[in-house]
Image 1 (cartoon, rainbow, N blue to C red):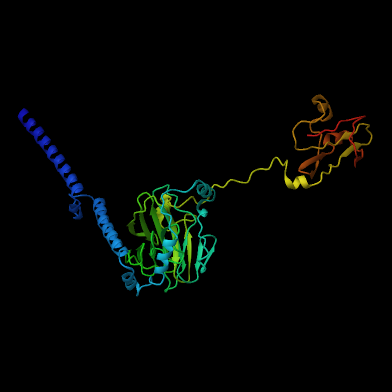
Image 2 (cartoon, rainbow, N blue to C red; image 1 turned 180 degrees about the vertical axis):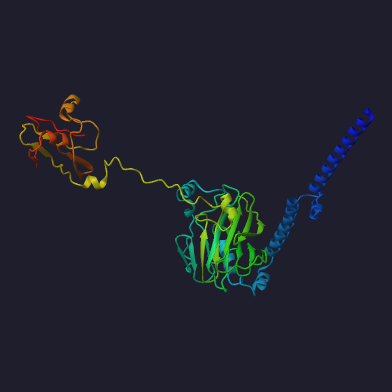
Length: 422
């Protein structure tokens, strides 16, 4: 019996050791030789590792093709662009980039811009045409109307670079069949009369041919993404920490692109080569891509945290009030026939809660609880004077007696009564 138990224990130990060695070898091989991971075998690597390896290969091919294109002489580039839509303004873009260097620095929003974003939320991002964008009309900061010619608009603020993903969408309100719209990201200083994705430091999706262009009109890094039409929505997602970018069409992500612009100051950019209307949403409304709403990928909050205006309690030194001539408020005296005692109406100001010139005991004798009834208010030089008449208590005491209220230049009680101010 003891021998059988020992044999079972030994067999279990051997199985555990063999399984552990097999798992270790599988993990080591899958990490050391990624070529084995391209097969859809469950023993070699996971789906994520195979996708990473495939992305590395595509990125290497894209980098090599981009370098080959940039090394081409100008004559060969113009020959290859002669039959394309990009040949007309290619020389202009090259000269503009040389004379107007782009901002290729790294960083986040400045303190001033960050305060502006906190106050205004997603409404802080605006698209303003410059002097060279003669064929562009912008309404409500994000509603863009292109009237013709190659035009590009870059947002006034960069991506904040505070979180992992930022996302914005462009709704194509009016898109003729002969017009192409480009939506993507670019660096500050992009040529205003060049389609996005056809000049340095930019990448954009073009709606006419459904292609994503990467920094050159000949470098189509992603093809056959599908053409867009009127009422479609193009989404652009930017990952500042890794430099990756993805495009979405009508709420479905269609491609991912890796760039060397990690932590760079990138801006949303919109371009068009003909008449059309585009509406940009950076987070002021709900996105078509539902995942962006759940993960809060907008550039900022929907509504800002703008504080209300300050309360002007102290008006001393105000220019308008200082220019107003001082007019003393009128004083009224309420007297009751049949009683020699005259009860004086007091003027009340907003300077404090204490009565000037009257002791507390004398005030208690002069003003009784519930003494004042209806109030007459007058405003002069920012001071409210509350004029109070007789109370219901005195009305019951002197029922049937007539009451009169006449303006008096001075206030008196019995022989002399000091003025009372609050």
